Amino acid sequence: MRPWGVLGVLSLALMLLGVDQTVLNVALPEMQDDLGLGAAQLQWVVGAHTLALAAGVLAAGNWGDRRGRRGALIAGLVVCGAASVLGAVAEGPTGVIAARALMGAGAAFMMPATLSILVHVFTDAARQRLAVTIWATVAGVGVLVGPVLGGWLLEHYSWRACFWGNVPLVLLTLLCVPLVVPPCREEEAPAPDPVGLILSSAGLSAVVWSFIQAPARGWTDGVVLAVAAVGLVLLAVMLCWERRAPAPMLPLGLFRHRGYAVAAASLSLLFFALVGSTFLLTFYLQGVRGMTPLGAGRTMLIGGLGVAVGGLISALATRRAEARWVMVAGLSSCAGAFLLLAGTTTGSGAGRIHVFLVLVGVGAGLTGGPATGLIMRAVPQGRAGVGAGVNDAVRSLGSTAGVAVLGSVFNTVYSGRMAGASGGGSGQGSGGGARDHLLSALAEAKLMAASAPVGSTGGGQSRAHRMELARRLVDDAAQAFLAGLRTTAWVSACVCVVGVCLVLLALPREGRKAKAADAVAAPVLTARPGEAG
Image (cartoon, rainbow, N blue to C red; front, side, top):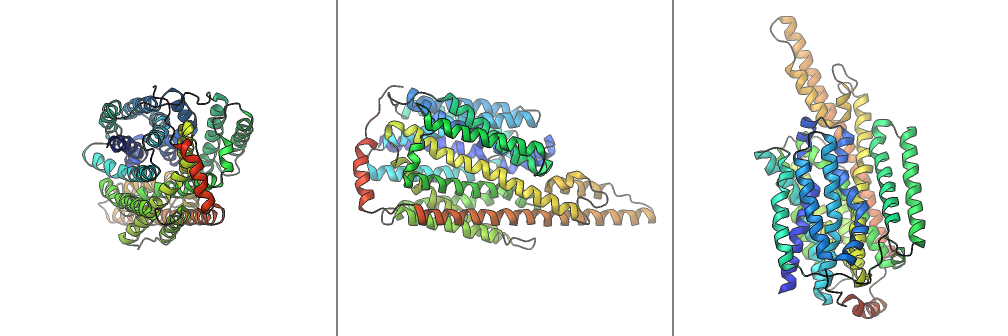
């Protein structure tokens, strides 16, 4: 029973990571009011975590293989706890964004450690597949539990409590890990690759910065184009370096395994669509539908339940069906969900969002488990940390790119609609803030209505006029927001369809050759690593 106890502690750590990623989503409106965040800064609050995770997870996985995976998990927990305290006491946007980035760096050590320890503990192939499916399901559920916890904390405290709330979870996990999780490491793991780490981190940061800043500066702005070009060049140099490095951080040879490459690409596409679009749901639920933070969090929890159901179905289906058909069903469910979201209007009822969350949750649950299993089966256990790091990296890269790209597409559509609206960004009485974000437009309309003069007949007419301007500003902002949401939903649906085609056309069938390959790989996958560290 000890392996299942280990899985329980690892699931607690993984749940903490999922909550960390999304607990602030429902707090973004309050944070914008308190700290004066702009649209780009809101994206950085979310994107800094996933960017730091994506940039560091491969190197952190290698570090765990060499120095000890349990030690890597503990180190990540300590960093996340310290970052939570720093975020809670931050006085401005820079401090919050820096704390989020530090939390992402801690997560980079934790995520690959949880998955590689799991593979080390579960040596039986069937139990290992089930454990990996549970791992992927918990990861998805944690992401959607975050908004519920964040909403409850906001109802009783403030956005700072979303940071403070991590501290007891970190302490509880730190107490359990040394007692339950066994030490494991690989004595012959490759040496670190600092050059690859620096090139990938700088390249990713430059590309993400350019996408986030493009709506404000303009897509043809010289600085935006120059930074994007520098980022792409750095990433190209990194790939060339990894091909020739004696101990590459990113083992490109693994991508020659078609099952590995297709599974990694599918996960990246899934998280691109999932995180990029659901990032906007918080503002839709609170800004357009007028929900409280707790109400928005409870609504998002429907998606978490969908992920749990999808993970259970996936665990049962992969016993009888090929992983490719389970993944196709999952990605198709997500595509259908985004098509449903693309039809959202101001008159749409809550049922549309509920169905969307169920479909996208079930789809994510169906896809995540089999894709993660394919990735880990292609990696020798001696490099389980790197394999887990690649799994986490493609998720984080997809998430980061989704927030940056879809957020930028949304901001471009929203700003364009508001600039041309009669009562919006260019209308009388409204300022540039209304063109920046929905919440700025709502706050401006509220101020406009509150400052309308009353008393005399002339004043009454002026008040009626300003009240009408405020109403038109709210309507125009809602219409502009929904136009941006529909556009991002269409893009997300297309991304999921690309994932379906990729799996159908490129993922190898699990026939006799695949079973023979698994039989050859089994001794490698079940070899016990060194017990030090």
